[in-house]
Image (cartoon, rainbow, N blue to C red; front, side, top):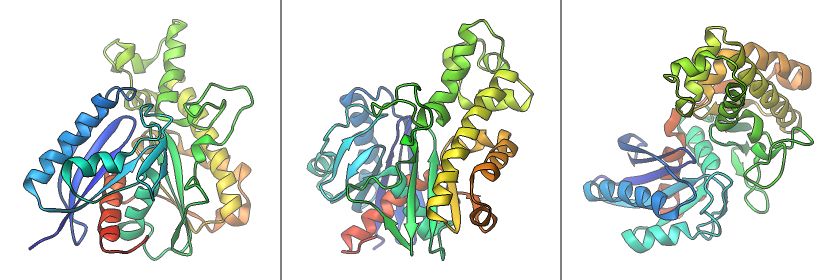
Length: 320
């Protein structure tokens, strides 16, 4: 009988649930918008509905969840999440296990994505790499000597909370001037919306049918490609700030490869010359010369696939 494992990506914008088999093949996938991240019932009902649909069709050996935020993976608790406010000392594993009676394991979403790349993608046969996700939030996971680096509190890699400006916008973590407040998807959108509020014209608004509330980074990237000044400024500010932060990662860790995933990565492709120019300015020349920067092979399913793999490993008594 085939064995199946369920993985969930719980992000600030979307929830992905999927099934993999023992060979890591994706068998089925369900995607939902996360919705109101301040309301527990709104988000949890979606998670439970996705898991219900999948467990009704497949005999599940284990469930893995990659959650945005600061995670105590041993206790199955999300300590806090800047982008999903109700996740505050939240016993997510227990909540799932009580309903479905299936062993459930929780991990930080970026670390789960790194596991997917380590097993299936650009991290294979690489000793030292950094996996980065760009989306509603920004995070990194560090692989050194083929092993995930956690830090004392499982917080290693919280790149999104590098302080980039002294008196910046308040971040969801409570600090000001974090990388996420400049280079994340919502921050890019907010930059454009602020310009629109000053009655400045942008093609991004036209692509959103004149409704500023419908503007997303896809509209902004498309407008930037067509030379829209406001959209280009938003993306250039975001990519240059990200590149400065990444330079610190490169100089500190000297990785062989940096793997970039997340929904924002495609939008950033519009301003890649500015990205590399900034890297050359701030990163050490030797470290940059021998470094490969590549897109994640596991795509937008990285976190959910990695979470499922974590479930597979843990239920077999293996660590990662």
